Length: 352
Ligand code: GLY
Image 1 (tube, rainbow, N blue to C red):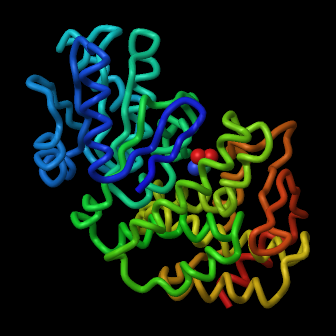
Image 2 (spheres, rainbow, N blue to C red; image 1 turned 180 degrees about the horizontal axis):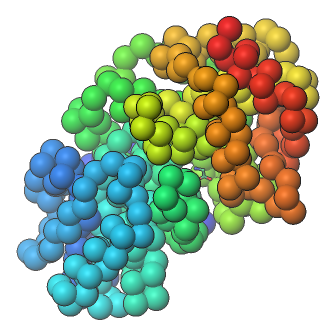
């Protein structure tokens, strides 16, 4: 698989990933190498990964897995570990894990001594097709998603799809929601192909296609002034749903992809009402997501709290909540505002 070149770094796949990493390490004279893992990637991915990496010495820093640990406190723990282990400005942090590890690790590296180099090695489908690519780094603020962070690019991203064998089906489905999103916002053909996927056993080519789609968008608007906002389709309501479930004691936490799948159905409904998405495509989107992701029961109290969380969305400006909607599958529109009465209709449509 050919490497995908971004503005400042490359995304390498499979055996080329290891070759490129070893070449980079040989050329770069890093003072120390740190590998950030959680308990799952420490056990399931680190031994395989390090068996291919040509370094004699490295330090492992482990954080506890889970979105609830994507916090500034966890960052402080990693910064303290780096400091105790005498990391300096020429140190390298390799983030080996899912979206929490790559987002948090990228942020830790970007701030430590005003910035050290980092490399992302995503081990979940979600991190391979979305979180690890594009330079968004950061942590949550309480239950509010990704409120603190910076955009800063890694030295390289290494995608090794065999790590997906260590993942549960639910995690794979969660990542797949971001791939379906790529079809909805950029390429109807891709959406049609993805709809038919029933097994995640051989999806290397599709991971590649998703990274190409994301990279094409990020290349045109790396700091999300305009076009990059389209990558947030489903995320305005989806993040609010995810935050609510993260904090609520009455509900089980949803995985990111599960929450944005709900967000994409709701925002497809809004697209049908406001920006021309046909009823046929709306039904197609709803049935596709509900075939993969269990329907969640929302009470009117849940919906009220979820809508209250919209004011924290990162795309908001001048008091407006800005949505990404679809004119049709493959054609998004940004900075759309929603009349208040349509939110309840959207949830009613999701529930019916
Ligand atoms: N996850 C959306 C973006 O990277 O812009």
